[in-house]
Length: 202
Image (cartoon, rainbow, N blue to C red):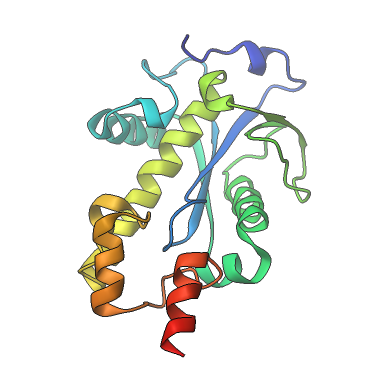
């Protein structure tokens, strides 16, 4: 089943944004959220949960959405993740994504179980929302491609961890890089694998 506009049609107001984040699980890099308000006259064909799409399809849809929809990007840094925990950092990134939209939404549909407290509009959490709402699906695609590109750029500065392919997740290549090169400023020190390495070093 593909996502559709059923949830959007049930929301009050004309401008409904979908919100999703990516990067809660990786050992390194920021958590990134996107907020997307679709133009109903120009909804791209093939919008779906970003995890179900090929990298090439995500890239294409990302560029179309940035051209034809209202898009806001927000992120929370590694320092913020370590200070307030990954859940709160994810919600903060969502707030920043909505604040970055060029127009204010009337309502927000949010993937997951939690809504940020600082939104200026009403909101609704939707479990597996990226499989139900085209707006959330669009946000999942934009967030995923944006963060992947960030990690590719960081990989140029810190080669050896495989971030250009693993996006900071805990793969064998990432573990090998940590053993060889150690912990970087972009690693999440509050995450157990990184915390354990730092404890061993001390």
